[in-house]
Image 1 (cartoon, rainbow, N blue to C red):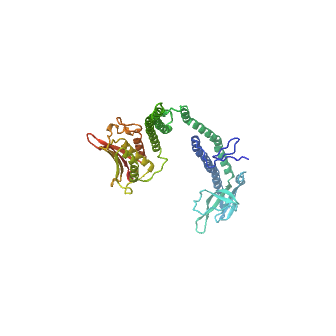
Image 2: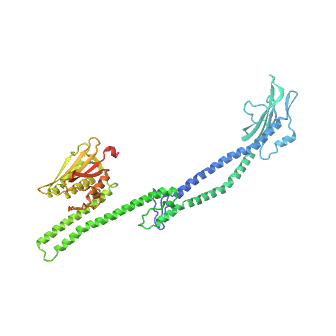
Length: 502
């Protein structure tokens, strides 16, 4: 037994029915435009039918109303006064004229000056009480024995005064049923609406054909995109697409340019990473070959193992920094932020780096705001912030020369501006400094200042800048001791205050 796939589901031949109840169908631009064009047309058609019927009723009634008015005026001329009494005599030809209708029933009624019945249909309803001028014919709708009627009525002046001396008036009414009117209205509606049953499908077909032609530029654009090679990221030609599609094509071109830049950056990054990893790996292989050579004594073997250890440490650090940079670049949507005590994180990193600084005889310390004090907390990711601080301090340790006679000094600070509430992280050293021309270059991956023999991969500062960007912070560098012969570098990371991040 196979179930029928509802809307939104599908089912394949030879397989059980795979129904996705809550899956929405993909919207079609062609279908959307067609719906919005045809729906008003199909909704207006029955409205047009109703309006046509109402107009046809009014048109069909006018000639019959005029005939009723004529008949009422004709009957009024047949009322006479004889010996003080109103009389009405209907000749046989006139009587036959009133009854000559095979479709409708025709009635008339004549009442004398005192309301006495003179001739016609006794049960015909009286007109409403109103100040109708004598001799003027009016038309009203009424009913008789459950049948709808149109009634023409008028008051006729008699040469017969009443008790007050005023002339009396007689009432003449002529009525007929509405069959002829309905038949004529139906014929009018048929004459108007029947052609529309041909015109409406033709209009739908023409709209569909016009929409097919109008949407062809989108199909051509799709064909051009599909015909492109996978490595073709050149912009699309906006001159060959409709004006309405130009913003979409411009956005796609912008995406292609950003994708092209991203791919170029990744290729350059991978090439530089391969180059940086090639050196320590080549050293590892060379030292392993030296250790295996014939005639090598124990001291040579130890020296080779020490070199292998240093090369493996360098390779491990390079890999770790590559992973840190990749994590920093993709952390915007992966890792959530939380309140972080920047002073506490800085002090923890300083404690972790103390053994390495002491091995190089460097004086490493912290000063500034205490953990938990006002203004030292920011909304950020503690893992990335710790990585940023660690890279700044490691960079300072790598490039700060030190000796027992003249030890290097590295200071980490966390400062809070009491007025703007800007939180500042500083790491300064007493190294050789960085020339102004190279201060922007050092933030590029794998770039290293020429003339330095420090061990590093050139990834620390790019990681710092990327993490700062993730936290809407800015980073700058200055000389620790400005002058003709500057000594040392001071890196400053400024985190925005609450008003800037709002």
